Image (cartoon, rainbow, N blue to C red):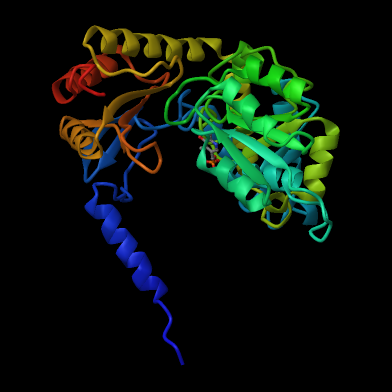
Length: 406
Ligand SMILES: *Cc1c(COP(=O)(O)O)cnc(C)c1O
């Protein structure tokens, strides 16, 4: 018998290489307290949290917590089954209706996570309907900085994936040109998760209209933050269901809960129900979470003052960082990365900040491109001016002034 390579040893070797290159990751166990806004506790020490995607402070909002607890008391915890097998409750249906109305779409469909939603949509639309049929593979054109799950979804679908340099609409056009006549989709983050900038959505929609390609936008970081009534980046750009037929967004970021949805036409949603495997073959999200999401949607939609506080915090951070010459990236969203470049330097800066009482993660390759390690600061409506000023002072002690970051 020939000997086989040892898979566990291969994994251990890869890990050793990664950790050696200052690219290792570790899970931190943190504590939280609903009474302590924007704080987390590590080994008993309180840190100010500048890492959370809970932009509207809904994860600890009393009305959202009460909705969760109340629904759990009424209906129990788990859904008990998949949506198609008796797990789809009134709470799910009410949430889907509210999400469709909020985003100005005909229908919405819940998924348990954003990762699964993207896998499901791309596989349902791009995988050959009958695996044996001899059809040419569909084309999926994507921004190079798209979230990992959009990339993985295209790979899972077995389509042809072509990526274009970040936000470069003409480069996207050239990618379509490589496969004229092929069924095609363009998928992009609405707000880029590690950069905070917004995709050129109107230009991409116009390109898709010219190319007869389907536009899909992942608005995980835009929903609740951008647009009239927080309806997201597509609403801000005035792109309706015809111009942007596939909208995906998550419920675990600005909405502070968990889960995700896809919104669009009735025919899109009906098709996903039949073919999106991550919808079909998984347990429905706990109905109490859906009830909590519904409460969060109501606040995110109607509490403009909360969104205004977030926007003021973003402005204060940017103005202070610019005044101190910190290496800001062009973002007007809650994601405000500071470019460091070198992974070791980014990690050291994060450790210095933590010692000073601020939790800001260092984001390193492969999450971001080689040589573009950064501190990813995220802001929340619950930060107060002193939190932001304290962070800025700590940042200017541990980061080089901009220009040195190249
Ligand atoms: C977080 C995120 C996802 C994944 O959503 P989860 O619900 O956390 O699985 C998808 N897309 C983008 C752009 C994200 O930032």
